Length: 568
Ligand code: HEM
Image (cartoon, rainbow, N blue to C red; front, side):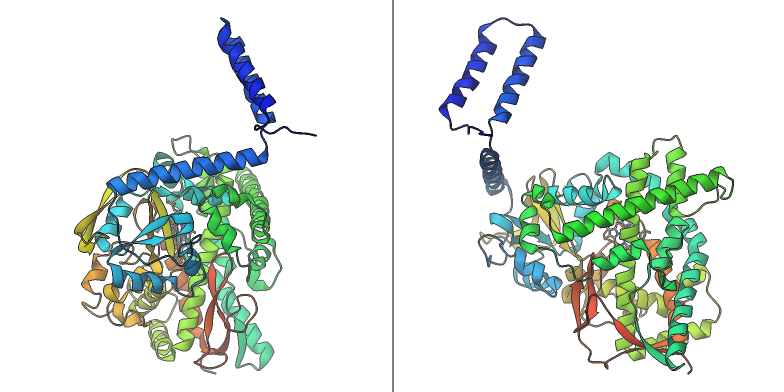
């Protein structure tokens, strides 16, 4: 069908005749409304995709010019690295970098603890590498500093209305309803579930060794789905039994699927591009459907069990049990069924991917640092039987040190970008020099400014963690006064930003640390790990849902280690 463009003069005549009709008579309100509606319909009908694109481009250019003008007038203009591309700024260089944290650290050394990085289409983001600035930022999260439009659209598209994209009061409400599932008391009750999973891994590894020569074998160690399956949903995903299952299948499909960087980076400026079909987008779609299906089944099964009196609602401490209680609570923190389903999908991904990547790194570090592994095993063997929750927390200092050194050295989520919802002044603990050469102790930012924090940079920074920051050295957590003053100024969980800080700090960090320690206790006590191809084996980063380590030359995300039964 022929669709006339708005540049067609006849169309302008139609519009002006409508307006003339609207203004030349005295009409009642409903007639005016109908005519406005009709004229809007007419305009929409006569608008082509090209017109829409033109309109969006003009609006976008106006918005950028307005923001830039405001920034010029009100914001502190910081120094920073030059752009390498007119279109992408430095965004592509950072996207493809093996260690973006190291790039941010080098720029902090050159330009100071707050600096500006050019990104897409003339935009920029301010990076904060200063404890005082970061504490201020996290104090104001969810109100002054909020998700970028892209972050919101991406999360909503892939998970729905989950806590990750809620802001302000809505975030507080969702957090209050989820918190009971993650209290110390709740995690303490989940400990037997974590041990059950760890023992299943142990049994699986033993059978693999027995099937080989009875002493050792090579095992790909990235396989940890059961814990979250059991603890979160009173459900055994069964991946350690070697059964196939749809959740594990979905995660596996992401192995090696690299996002289209151009499209992804453009979507940070034009968030609607998130909806352009891509093969990775299809994987997210599949994941979403599978997780929605599984979550719905969990929900139905839990309801049936509760109704049949199999599980006492009061005693069901699994995450789904707590979510169901929130649904039925009748209080202001009540969650709708759709919200529960969305949170469940998010939790499966948030809990599984992050914990699994971190544990893989821990096993890798122990395999390439045999002295640390031997020292850890000595502590675990001396302790003897399986520790309780309190003993895991207080009585195994070297295990605690290994876990926290892994969290410091390998944060699975390595950068966060938010945008200012209002103008603000960010205080600094040390002065920086601006573009005009002024020395300032605080920086003014205007509404819309993007603010970035690189966890990888902060956690491994020489300026913050001292001369041995780039070495995996658990001892730093044990020696009196060994955490440098600058690192101590860094708030967050044990001075780390791995779980970020403020109102959005990871709800599952107690869960993750307890699970991590239980698994390490069981496996390192019973097995000796070595790099399959010797201590110099190269590791590289690849993509799963998050970026993950793999041994160079392996397919997918494989980390094959030689696993020997301890004492054999
Ligand atoms: C080593 C493991 C983990 C790491 C490093 C980690 C890290 C994080 C980080 C950085 C955030 C903030 C994300 C953002 O605001 O953009 C977060 C949020 C969250 N995490 Fe974790 N996480 C881990 C494990 C878990 C586990 C095991 C669970 C649940 C069982 C969990 C549940 C959550 C939830 C519900 C949020 C949203 C909190 C909110 O928005 O208020 N996480 N996590």
